[in-house]
Length: 243
Image (tube, rainbow, N blue to C red):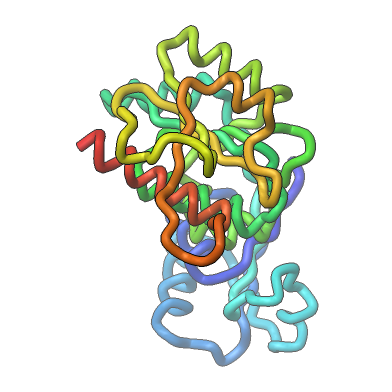
């Protein structure tokens, strides 16, 4: 199994608490504030050796440029199967709520969306194998540990995955600035929220597979939101309606 480097205090701490398999853990020398001490303590509980290194070496080890004094190498994150995401919903006794991403290429956006998915109670995220970012160190850090708890499935064809999920009772809504205002849509029940990539939005083929298109009301001088922000706004409208 390949190794994955994760950086940042939240990401490393949540990986520890989730029981991930650590290969190594580096902490910047003489850095002993509360969050770092918590990481050191959690590592000690699991028998993970902490290597204390100089700041210059930490900077060389870093892939993100913002390690916050903590870097770990762990066994790589495993992609879930779509069936695992549906099982997570069934285990919680809830109608499935999935977030599907069509061509997200920025790892910061993917990490932020995984974080939102976890906090909004979504049962998982689905991404395509091609023309999209996968699970990287930057994604892990930006997710602030949510990647340890929220499954991410990777599929060959997003449109085909939507068709398969429709057969299992899910309805699909995609973000589209020309769609129906989100407050006027019924977003309850088993649902998949589709968010398009930076710049191009949801592709025509995927959009045609969706049952609804949702527009976020815009009052400013520009006409679009960052993909991760749009995902958050729409996800929490789904949360509101499902309450």
